[in-house]
Image (cartoon, rainbow, N blue to C red; front, side, top):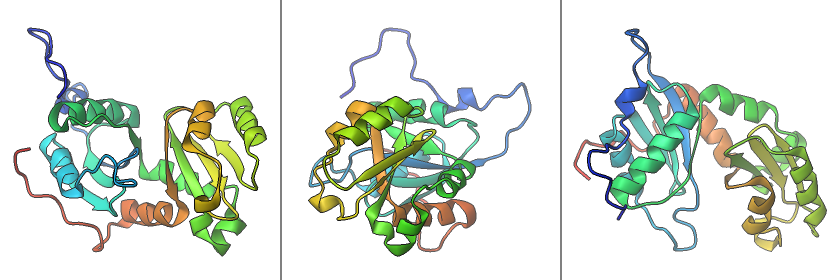
Length: 219
């Protein structure tokens, strides 16, 4: 469990970020990705629990896709960085889960799809392309250093807070490890291009294939 807080201190509340000098803010859709859950039997977290968690902390229209920590929701908070900090704090407090959240808006998602440097490869086999979501913009020198360290056929390129890695032979045969990637680019979470495209459609239009809104219940 998270360490006890100092006397008189309070956990950050989402509502404190909704105030805009008396002006009512409209709900904005966001996509949130969790790093490293439900992978290889490690850090198992039920998606129902995650949906309930987001609902309990005041987010709306919560949906999930697959079991790898892909969530879509609405919020009055404007920036992804604010939501990332808030959700990371609350997940530790409520779920005893220390995990990184990577939050993007539909416009940011649209941009990362448009800027894909491996369009032809993605059209041929989207499962061979991985989009990496970063906490901050990638340093071109670090991207170049990572490419130099890769001994196989993989190619990495980056734009802003996203990197793209093309695996010609698939990830299963690759010797490019997460440790190598994060040593150069910082903490990151990856999704294959099929999932990226599905989340883009969901965030823009909604989908009946998404898991329904979680009922409100205490965690």
